[in-house]
Amino acid sequence: MSLLDIADLTLSFKGLSGLTEVLHGISLSIAPGEKVALVGESGSGKSVTARIVLGLLQEQKTARIGGTVRFAGQDLAALSPRDREGLRGTEISMIFQDPTSYLNPVFTIGRQFAEVLRRRDPGLARAACEARAIEMLAETAIPDPARVLGSYPFQLSGGMNQRVMIAMALANHPRLLIADEPGTALDVTVQAQTLKLMRQLVDLHETAVLFISHNLGVVREFADRVYVIYRGRIVEDGPTAAVFGDPRHAYTQALMAAVPRITGDGLPDVPEVSEAFLAPKVHHRLRSGRAT
Amino acid sequence: MSLLSLDHLSKTFRTAGGPVHAVRDVSLEVKSGECLAIVGESGSGKTTLANMILGILAPSAGEIRFDGQALPARRTATERRRIQFVQQNPLSALNPKRSVGASIRLGLDTYRIGGRAERWPAVEAALEAVGLPGEMRHRAPAALSGGQRQRVGIARALAVEPQLIVLDEPTSALDVLVQARVLRLLDRLRRERGLTYVFITHDLAVVRNIADRIAVFRAGRLIELGETAALFNDPKTDYTRSLIGAVPVVDESELELRTRLAEGP
Image (cartoon, rainbow over all chains, first blue to last red; front, top):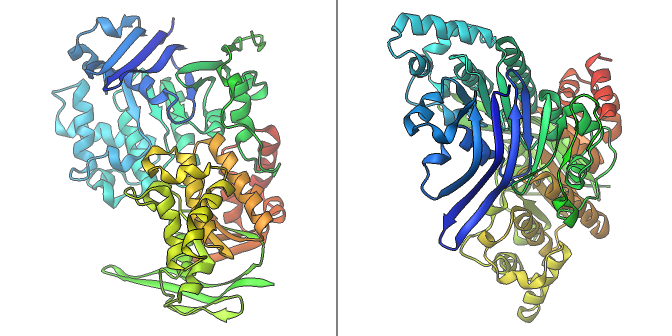
């Protein structure tokens, strides 16, 4: 059974000039422990999809949401706002692009960690919080975790803050981790280390991941399965190797071709927009690898 | 023929925590008509170096020569006109209250290029050179897409007919399909107009395909300089090797290159 099952999800925003349609019926599923990427350009609808799974957009008055989102068999729309909020930070957690805007600059890492742990276990004593935080930080290969707990975010490097954020996101053993462009704000060498660490930890804890990114190279290295999204529609999906090895949709093909190669194949000549990008979805089957 | 030469250039900032050596004793030549990439991670000194080339910052030591002449810290209008700048974020580079045409025209007025009557046609010609319609000059920057704004930033630099353009991460804020178009545009303009580029970026895959030579910076020092293909096939320093090794790639052939580099010399 799927851990996350999104069926025919639509989203539009009510504004002064009427309704703006953002998602036109998206279907996506993630099995327990599976790493799934949603890849697309800015404005494609990937981040709003994540916000709906987190139950955040449901609270926004201007948002019109259709279709169903089921998490562990429960329809999110059938839950009370309070129950939806209860899932965040416990069953579903999130990693953001920029750790410095996620972490609160005026509290120590230790205090913020305790706040995270007490979301699941409100009565957790200070000593127990500390012990658990040190254990999680050690898993992310942070040297001297006790010192880090006493530090403020600005006293740590960007890469270190990223590790802290990963440790916090996984501290309550969520079943689903949503990672929105993780490491994009970091240097390439730090980004590579961060992704490697994240992959090790989610494999260790068997955490499912919804990985949101515009970077095809990062997606190829991280995900088991890929959904490509263009202007609010899924245009292609399948196992990572199948989609990268044999992209069938015109948009996926353009996206792949547009990435400059380190082997120096020249500057790609691809269209910015094309009628063909609106062609029907291509689905690669899991086993045979044949597209349908 | 070298158009720009940096001779033992250094920049030290005095801070409360002691001196910060942002650029340390850098010497290099930029040849006329080439695209030289300056590559490095944050804190490598690449932006400080760009600011010195542009005359925004005065060097603490060393000399900058352009077209055979030493450039003073305080430059004349002509000296400024010949070296132009394209920034990463075109929205912060363009005045939001001016039409894009007025932003482009500002350079023509400042450097008194052409007669007054010729300047609006020159603005439209600059927009057309970057693939935008001339009538777009009436629009506000906010009404443009990211790719269009970056094209306006390029048009503004081109309009004053520079010899050298310093490009600081010109495509890293753009979507991949837009980035591909803008990179091709930059490459074509350089060839057609005999321009020289100093292309500053952290993106090695981009420079692999646009630069003639690459200068790798780390902690303010120039640690490796070479022809693009040679530098990728046989990096001389472990640092360059690790930078190439960290690039997320999409092709099997790229993976092979990365694996080979990871194994060492």
